[in-house]
Image 1 (cartoon, one colour):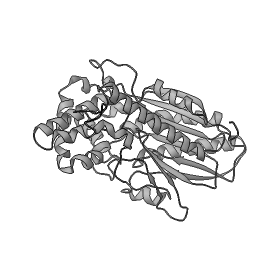
Image 2 (cartoon, rainbow, N blue to C red):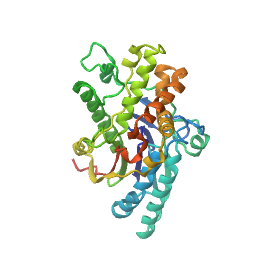
Image 3 (cartoon, rainbow, N blue to C red):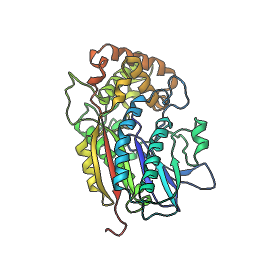
Image 4 (cartoon, helix red, strand yellow):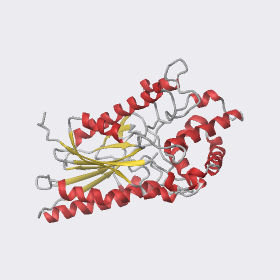
Length: 369
Protein backbone atom coordinates (compact mmCIF):
# COMPACT_ATOMS: atom_id res chain seq x y z
CA UNK A 1 0.00 0.00 0.00
CA UNK A 2 2.67 2.44 0.93
CA UNK A 3 5.07 3.63 -1.69
CA UNK A 4 8.32 1.81 -1.09
CA UNK A 5 11.26 4.08 -1.71
CA UNK A 6 14.53 2.85 -3.09
CA UNK A 7 17.45 5.22 -3.35
CA UNK A 8 20.08 3.36 -5.29
CA UNK A 9 23.38 5.20 -5.02
CA UNK A 10 25.66 3.94 -7.75
CA UNK A 11 28.84 5.04 -9.48
CA UNK A 12 28.62 3.04 -12.71
CA UNK A 13 28.30 5.52 -15.57
CA UNK A 14 28.15 2.92 -18.35
CA UNK A 15 24.84 1.27 -17.62
CA UNK A 16 21.30 2.34 -16.88
CA UNK A 17 18.75 0.01 -15.38
CA UNK A 18 15.51 0.80 -13.63
CA UNK A 19 12.85 -1.13 -11.80
CA UNK A 20 9.51 -0.49 -10.14
CA UNK A 21 9.14 -1.75 -6.61
CA UNK A 22 6.01 -1.51 -4.49
CA UNK A 23 5.34 -2.55 -0.94
CA UNK A 24 4.91 -6.19 -1.91
CA UNK A 25 8.29 -6.20 -3.69
CA UNK A 26 6.57 -7.22 -6.92
CA UNK A 27 9.40 -6.47 -9.29
CA UNK A 28 9.61 -5.16 -12.80
CA UNK A 29 13.15 -5.10 -14.20
CA UNK A 30 13.84 -2.95 -17.22
CA UNK A 31 17.06 -2.16 -19.05
CA UNK A 32 16.87 1.35 -20.45
CA UNK A 33 17.67 2.21 -24.03
CA UNK A 34 19.64 5.48 -23.73
CA UNK A 35 18.32 6.64 -27.12
CA UNK A 36 14.66 6.16 -26.26
CA UNK A 37 12.53 7.40 -23.37
CA UNK A 38 10.35 4.30 -23.61
CA UNK A 39 11.77 1.40 -21.66
CA UNK A 40 11.32 -2.21 -22.67
CA UNK A 41 11.42 -5.12 -20.27
CA UNK A 42 9.89 -8.26 -18.84
CA UNK A 43 6.91 -7.86 -16.55
CA UNK A 44 7.12 -9.88 -13.36
CA UNK A 45 4.12 -8.16 -11.79
CA UNK A 46 2.87 -4.66 -11.17
CA UNK A 47 -0.14 -2.61 -10.24
CA UNK A 48 -0.32 1.15 -10.47
CA UNK A 49 -1.59 3.89 -8.20
CA UNK A 50 -4.18 6.39 -9.41
CA UNK A 51 -2.44 8.96 -11.59
CA UNK A 52 -3.27 12.58 -12.29
CA UNK A 53 -4.10 15.32 -9.80
CA UNK A 54 -7.79 14.61 -9.09
CA UNK A 55 -9.43 14.03 -5.69
CA UNK A 56 -8.86 10.26 -5.91
CA UNK A 57 -5.30 10.49 -7.23
CA UNK A 58 -2.26 9.17 -5.44
CA UNK A 59 -0.73 12.66 -5.70
CA UNK A 60 -3.55 14.06 -3.54
CA UNK A 61 -3.67 11.11 -1.12
CA UNK A 62 -0.09 10.20 -0.27
CA UNK A 63 0.61 12.39 2.77
CA UNK A 64 1.00 9.19 4.80
CA UNK A 65 3.91 8.15 2.60
CA UNK A 66 5.26 11.69 2.56
CA UNK A 67 5.49 11.62 6.34
CA UNK A 68 7.86 8.68 6.39
CA UNK A 69 9.99 10.24 3.65
CA UNK A 70 10.51 13.29 5.87
CA UNK A 71 11.47 11.13 8.86
CA UNK A 72 13.96 9.15 6.76
CA UNK A 73 15.72 12.19 5.27
CA UNK A 74 18.08 13.00 8.18
CA UNK A 75 18.95 9.32 8.57
CA UNK A 76 19.91 8.98 4.91
CA UNK A 77 21.88 12.24 5.03
CA UNK A 78 23.78 11.00 8.09
CA UNK A 79 24.58 7.65 6.49
CA UNK A 80 25.76 9.28 3.25
CA UNK A 81 28.08 11.50 5.26
CA UNK A 82 29.53 8.57 7.20
CA UNK A 83 29.55 5.65 4.77
CA UNK A 84 29.53 6.76 1.15
CA UNK A 85 32.97 6.47 -0.47
CA UNK A 86 33.37 9.22 -3.08
CA UNK A 87 37.15 9.03 -3.44
CA UNK A 88 37.05 6.26 -6.03
CA UNK A 89 34.40 7.08 -8.60
CA UNK A 90 33.97 7.53 -12.32
CA UNK A 91 33.27 10.87 -13.99
CA UNK A 92 29.52 10.45 -13.50
CA UNK A 93 27.82 9.65 -10.20
CA UNK A 94 24.41 8.04 -10.67
CA UNK A 95 21.43 8.11 -8.30
CA UNK A 96 18.22 6.16 -8.95
CA UNK A 97 14.83 6.18 -7.23
CA UNK A 98 12.97 2.95 -8.01
CA UNK A 99 9.88 3.45 -5.87
CA UNK A 100 8.46 6.82 -6.83
CA UNK A 101 4.97 5.64 -7.88
CA UNK A 102 3.37 8.77 -9.37
CA UNK A 103 6.28 10.78 -8.16
CA UNK A 104 5.45 13.73 -5.93
CA UNK A 105 6.97 12.49 -2.68
CA UNK A 106 10.07 11.48 -4.58
CA UNK A 107 11.12 14.99 -5.60
CA UNK A 108 11.84 16.11 -2.04
CA UNK A 109 13.60 12.85 -1.22
CA UNK A 110 15.87 12.96 -4.26
CA UNK A 111 16.67 16.63 -3.70
CA UNK A 112 17.74 15.87 -0.14
CA UNK A 113 19.86 12.90 -1.22
CA UNK A 114 21.55 14.84 -4.01
CA UNK A 115 22.41 17.71 -1.67
CA UNK A 116 23.86 15.28 0.88
CA UNK A 117 26.04 13.62 -1.77
CA UNK A 118 27.23 16.97 -3.13
CA UNK A 119 28.15 18.00 0.41
CA UNK A 120 30.09 14.76 0.81
CA UNK A 121 32.02 15.49 -2.39
CA UNK A 122 32.81 19.03 -1.25
CA UNK A 123 33.95 17.83 2.17
CA UNK A 124 36.33 15.33 0.56
CA UNK A 125 37.58 17.86 -2.00
CA UNK A 126 36.04 15.96 -4.91
CA UNK A 127 33.88 16.95 -7.87
CA UNK A 128 31.56 14.91 -10.07
CA UNK A 129 28.79 15.03 -12.63
CA UNK A 130 25.44 13.72 -11.38
CA UNK A 131 22.72 11.81 -13.20
CA UNK A 132 19.38 11.08 -11.53
CA UNK A 133 16.95 8.40 -12.66
CA UNK A 134 13.42 7.73 -11.52
CA UNK A 135 10.96 4.99 -12.36
CA UNK A 136 7.31 6.03 -12.39
CA UNK A 137 4.53 3.44 -12.28
CA UNK A 138 2.24 5.62 -14.38
CA UNK A 139 2.78 7.89 -17.36
CA UNK A 140 -0.30 10.02 -16.65
CA UNK A 141 1.85 12.79 -15.19
CA UNK A 142 3.50 14.68 -18.07
CA UNK A 143 6.09 16.13 -15.70
CA UNK A 144 7.37 12.68 -14.81
CA UNK A 145 7.28 11.21 -18.30
CA UNK A 146 9.20 14.09 -19.87
CA UNK A 147 11.58 15.14 -17.11
CA UNK A 148 13.32 11.78 -16.85
CA UNK A 149 14.51 9.37 -19.49
CA UNK A 150 13.52 6.25 -17.56
CA UNK A 151 9.91 5.38 -16.85
CA UNK A 152 7.54 2.45 -17.09
CA UNK A 153 4.19 1.74 -18.66
CA UNK A 154 1.28 0.51 -16.52
CA UNK A 155 0.24 -3.06 -17.28
CA UNK A 156 -2.09 -5.61 -15.78
CA UNK A 157 -0.88 -7.30 -12.63
CA UNK A 158 -0.15 -11.01 -13.06
CA UNK A 159 0.22 -13.35 -10.11
CA UNK A 160 3.18 -15.75 -10.17
CA UNK A 161 1.88 -19.26 -11.00
CA UNK A 162 3.02 -20.71 -7.67
CA UNK A 163 1.04 -18.03 -5.79
CA UNK A 164 -2.21 -18.50 -7.72
CA UNK A 165 -3.14 -21.44 -5.50
CA UNK A 166 -4.61 -19.02 -2.94
CA UNK A 167 -7.43 -18.45 -5.46
CA UNK A 168 -7.81 -22.14 -6.40
CA UNK A 169 -10.73 -23.81 -4.60
CA UNK A 170 -9.06 -27.22 -4.98
CA UNK A 171 -5.89 -26.11 -3.21
CA UNK A 172 -5.20 -26.33 0.55
CA UNK A 173 -4.07 -22.69 0.33
CA UNK A 174 -7.43 -21.49 -1.05
CA UNK A 175 -8.21 -18.18 0.65
CA UNK A 176 -12.00 -18.43 0.66
CA UNK A 177 -14.04 -15.27 1.36
CA UNK A 178 -10.91 -13.25 2.18
CA UNK A 179 -8.75 -10.91 0.12
CA UNK A 180 -5.56 -11.10 2.17
CA UNK A 181 -3.67 -13.44 4.47
CA UNK A 182 -4.55 -11.52 7.66
CA UNK A 183 -6.50 -13.90 9.89
CA UNK A 184 -6.28 -16.66 7.28
CA UNK A 185 -5.21 -20.28 7.69
CA UNK A 186 -1.55 -21.20 8.19
CA UNK A 187 -1.21 -22.46 4.61
CA UNK A 188 -2.30 -19.08 3.23
CA UNK A 189 0.05 -17.19 5.54
CA UNK A 190 2.92 -19.39 4.41
CA UNK A 191 2.06 -18.86 0.74
CA UNK A 192 2.23 -15.08 1.19
CA UNK A 193 5.40 -15.21 3.27
CA UNK A 194 7.19 -17.56 0.87
CA UNK A 195 6.32 -15.48 -2.18
CA UNK A 196 7.44 -12.31 -0.41
CA UNK A 197 10.82 -13.85 0.41
CA UNK A 198 11.28 -14.93 -3.22
CA UNK A 199 10.42 -11.44 -4.47
CA UNK A 200 12.75 -9.66 -2.05
CA UNK A 201 15.61 -12.04 -2.84
CA UNK A 202 15.10 -11.55 -6.59
CA UNK A 203 15.01 -7.80 -6.06
CA UNK A 204 18.24 -7.80 -4.06
CA UNK A 205 19.99 -10.01 -6.62
CA UNK A 206 18.98 -7.67 -9.45
CA UNK A 207 20.17 -4.58 -7.62
CA UNK A 208 23.45 -6.31 -6.76
CA UNK A 209 24.23 -6.48 -10.49
CA UNK A 210 23.88 -2.70 -10.76
CA UNK A 211 25.55 -1.39 -7.62
CA UNK A 212 29.30 -0.99 -7.62
CA UNK A 213 31.27 -2.26 -4.66
CA UNK A 214 30.69 0.14 -1.78
CA UNK A 215 27.48 1.50 -3.33
CA UNK A 216 24.63 2.19 -0.92
CA UNK A 217 20.98 1.19 -1.16
CA UNK A 218 18.32 2.61 1.17
CA UNK A 219 14.93 0.95 1.58
CA UNK A 220 11.79 2.03 3.40
CA UNK A 221 9.64 -1.05 3.88
CA UNK A 222 5.99 -1.08 5.06
CA UNK A 223 5.55 -3.56 7.89
CA UNK A 224 3.60 -4.42 11.02
CA UNK A 225 4.78 -5.26 14.53
CA UNK A 226 4.98 -8.93 15.43
CA UNK A 227 2.18 -8.42 17.98
CA UNK A 228 -0.51 -5.83 18.61
CA UNK A 229 -3.80 -5.83 20.48
CA UNK A 230 -6.69 -5.75 17.95
CA UNK A 231 -9.02 -4.48 20.67
CA UNK A 232 -7.05 -1.28 21.19
CA UNK A 233 -5.06 -0.84 17.98
CA UNK A 234 -5.18 -1.45 14.24
CA UNK A 235 -2.79 -1.79 11.31
CA UNK A 236 -3.15 -1.72 7.55
CA UNK A 237 -3.92 -5.44 7.77
CA UNK A 238 -7.01 -4.61 9.84
CA UNK A 239 -8.16 -2.31 7.06
CA UNK A 240 -7.55 -5.00 4.43
CA UNK A 241 -9.97 -7.16 6.42
CA UNK A 242 -12.58 -4.38 6.42
CA UNK A 243 -12.15 -3.85 2.68
CA UNK A 244 -12.69 -7.58 2.17
CA UNK A 245 -15.88 -7.48 4.24
CA UNK A 246 -17.14 -4.59 2.09
CA UNK A 247 -16.57 -6.67 -1.04
CA UNK A 248 -18.50 -9.55 0.52
CA UNK A 249 -21.34 -7.11 1.33
CA UNK A 250 -21.50 -6.11 -2.34
CA UNK A 251 -21.52 -9.77 -3.33
CA UNK A 252 -24.48 -10.33 -0.98
CA UNK A 253 -26.26 -7.48 -2.79
CA UNK A 254 -25.69 -9.21 -6.11
CA UNK A 255 -23.17 -6.75 -7.53
CA UNK A 256 -20.97 -9.73 -8.37
CA UNK A 257 -20.64 -13.34 -7.23
CA UNK A 258 -18.99 -14.48 -4.01
CA UNK A 259 -16.71 -16.56 -6.21
CA UNK A 260 -15.41 -13.27 -7.59
CA UNK A 261 -14.23 -12.34 -4.09
CA UNK A 262 -12.82 -15.83 -3.51
CA UNK A 263 -10.64 -15.43 -6.60
CA UNK A 264 -9.23 -12.05 -5.56
CA UNK A 265 -6.22 -11.68 -3.27
CA UNK A 266 -4.33 -8.47 -2.59
CA UNK A 267 -0.77 -9.12 -3.84
CA UNK A 268 0.78 -7.43 -0.83
CA UNK A 269 2.60 -8.81 2.17
CA UNK A 270 3.29 -6.70 5.23
CA UNK A 271 6.40 -8.17 6.76
CA UNK A 272 7.55 -8.03 10.39
CA UNK A 273 11.06 -6.79 11.27
CA UNK A 274 12.37 -10.24 12.22
CA UNK A 275 11.22 -11.78 8.94
CA UNK A 276 12.69 -9.00 6.82
CA UNK A 277 16.02 -9.01 8.64
CA UNK A 278 16.35 -12.77 8.11
CA UNK A 279 15.83 -12.31 4.36
CA UNK A 280 18.48 -9.58 4.21
CA UNK A 281 20.98 -11.65 6.15
CA UNK A 282 20.68 -14.51 3.65
CA UNK A 283 22.04 -12.29 0.89
CA UNK A 284 25.74 -12.75 0.13
CA UNK A 285 26.00 -9.45 -1.77
CA UNK A 286 25.39 -6.86 0.95
CA UNK A 287 26.32 -5.84 4.45
CA UNK A 288 23.47 -4.58 6.62
CA UNK A 289 24.65 -1.14 7.71
CA UNK A 290 21.55 0.07 9.52
CA UNK A 291 18.03 -1.10 10.28
CA UNK A 292 15.50 0.67 12.47
CA UNK A 293 11.80 1.29 12.94
CA UNK A 294 10.54 4.73 11.92
CA UNK A 295 7.72 6.65 13.56
CA UNK A 296 5.54 7.92 10.74
CA UNK A 297 3.92 11.31 11.43
CA UNK A 298 2.03 10.87 8.15
CA UNK A 299 -0.56 8.74 9.93
CA UNK A 300 -1.84 11.91 11.62
CA UNK A 301 -2.77 13.35 8.22
CA UNK A 302 -5.60 10.78 7.88
CA UNK A 303 -7.87 11.75 10.79
CA UNK A 304 -11.27 10.82 9.36
CA UNK A 305 -13.02 7.90 7.62
CA UNK A 306 -13.24 9.71 4.28
CA UNK A 307 -9.51 10.49 4.43
CA UNK A 308 -8.67 6.83 4.96
CA UNK A 309 -11.09 5.75 2.23
CA UNK A 310 -9.47 8.17 -0.26
CA UNK A 311 -6.04 6.96 0.80
CA UNK A 312 -6.97 3.32 0.13
CA UNK A 313 -8.79 4.17 -3.08
CA UNK A 314 -5.77 5.98 -4.52
CA UNK A 315 -3.61 2.93 -3.84
CA UNK A 316 -5.96 0.11 -4.87
CA UNK A 317 -8.59 1.42 -7.28
CA UNK A 318 -6.80 0.19 -10.40
CA UNK A 319 -6.24 -3.26 -8.95
CA UNK A 320 -9.87 -3.55 -7.82
CA UNK A 321 -11.20 -2.19 -11.11
CA UNK A 322 -9.26 -4.78 -13.08
CA UNK A 323 -10.98 -7.58 -11.15
CA UNK A 324 -14.43 -6.26 -10.17
CA UNK A 325 -15.09 -3.49 -12.71
CA UNK A 326 -15.19 0.28 -12.31
CA UNK A 327 -18.93 0.52 -11.66
CA UNK A 328 -18.64 -0.76 -8.06
CA UNK A 329 -15.75 1.46 -6.92
CA UNK A 330 -17.76 4.44 -5.59
CA UNK A 331 -20.14 2.19 -3.65
CA UNK A 332 -17.28 0.08 -2.32
CA UNK A 333 -15.38 2.97 -0.78
CA UNK A 334 -18.54 4.62 0.54
CA UNK A 335 -19.22 1.36 2.37
CA UNK A 336 -15.62 1.24 3.54
CA UNK A 337 -15.81 4.78 4.97
CA UNK A 338 -19.05 3.89 6.80
CA UNK A 339 -17.46 0.86 8.45
CA UNK A 340 -14.41 2.87 9.49
CA UNK A 341 -16.67 5.59 10.95
CA UNK A 342 -18.65 3.00 12.92
CA UNK A 343 -15.59 1.94 14.92
CA UNK A 344 -14.14 4.36 17.52
CA UNK A 345 -10.82 2.55 17.11
CA UNK A 346 -10.17 4.31 13.79
CA UNK A 347 -11.04 7.80 15.02
CA UNK A 348 -7.68 8.21 16.79
CA UNK A 349 -4.64 8.07 14.45
CA UNK A 350 -2.46 7.11 17.41
CA UNK A 351 -4.19 3.72 17.44
CA UNK A 352 -2.62 2.98 14.04
CA UNK A 353 0.35 0.69 14.72
CA UNK A 354 1.65 -0.09 11.22
CA UNK A 355 5.38 0.56 11.02
CA UNK A 356 8.03 1.47 8.48
CA UNK A 357 11.42 -0.23 8.46
CA UNK A 358 14.42 1.79 7.33
CA UNK A 359 17.26 -0.31 5.92
CA UNK A 360 20.65 0.73 4.58
CA UNK A 361 22.64 -1.85 2.62
CA UNK A 362 26.16 -1.61 1.24
CA UNK A 363 27.24 -3.59 -1.80
CA UNK A 364 30.15 -5.89 -0.98
CA UNK A 365 33.20 -5.85 -3.27
CA UNK A 366 32.71 -8.02 -6.32
CA UNK A 367 35.64 -10.25 -5.38
CA UNK A 368 34.29 -10.98 -1.89
CA UNK A 369 33.13 -14.53 -2.73
